[in-house]
Length: 259
Image (cartoon, rainbow, N blue to C red; front, side, top):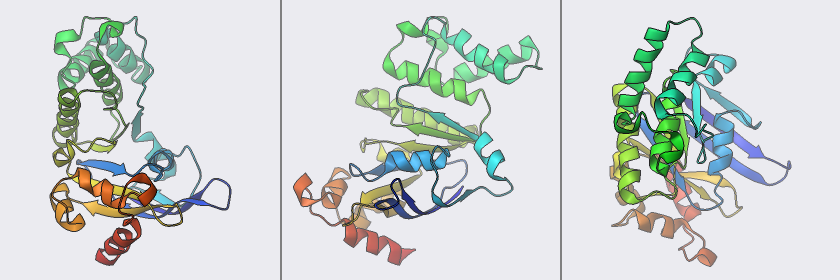
């Protein structure tokens, strides 16, 4: 997926995003992190076409409409029928999306999807009995069974403990590498950053506009930002009134010089 958002503004005056140029690799995981107010949510709205912007988002061989049909979006608070069992929830999603397929085929798809999402041990339980992490797995499974090529997950690890969040990251890695899906994750959580193939760091410049300060491997980030710990990256990028070092403009310039 090639993203080129020249600029995005809601009021025609203050720019929310500017010069967002990304080549998101297929069948890999890409994490988007950033400082508060840097425009992560707006970037997601651009990716799923919930808002207009100046620029283009394309994928080779697909027109605008076909591109949208390839994308599955999972929100931080997914809408689920909590009275259904896990198996029923996933099966009926398949039934609604593949009306001409036989019940036997749909049940086979459901079984595979439950296995891929790590839900075998709770598949007969009602959704309302699940933990927050398990509900997120159901939401992911419901999108997987629709056979979308691009999966965008918006802060799905918020409020989860470190172990559950790490388990979700491992599952998304499996989906990307084994199931050949392109996975884009937006998160505030830096603990599992090394589990992703690529990382995008979005920051506010001196004009309060969202810009890219880094895009690349998580293993090169510490060198690029000259830190020993991933958490220190956002400390460098935050403004002084947020307790940071106010170096966002410096790293935006460093990044743009490197590409």
